[in-house]
Length: 125
Image 1: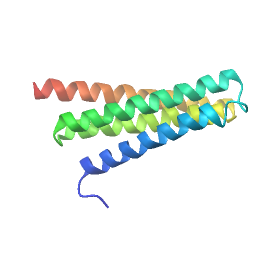
Image 2: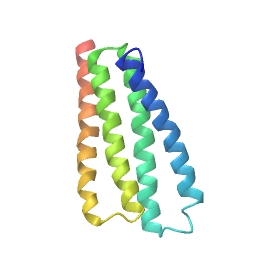
Image 3: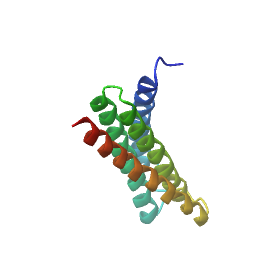
């Protein structure tokens, strides 16, 4: 589909950025009268983590000049953002409480992405 993993990850990150904006607007407007304040706070946390980690993945790809370590960091950040934020979106919309057990998996992927990015910079320096 795309010429390289670098371009694929960049395209995924850009689309997730668009999704983050759309879900943020959806939460602020469509869900305001539907969800209780606690659920809206969970929704906002999901949007924030998604957006910040999309930006971090794009920065990793840009800083890495297509380096494998930078691609791994970006992939981990994107996977973590999807799992972490996705599970929070589901919980805010009423998913069973056990679904919250998925959230730490996403958080672990996010942490691994940041560590991989640090390793990339340490190798590059």
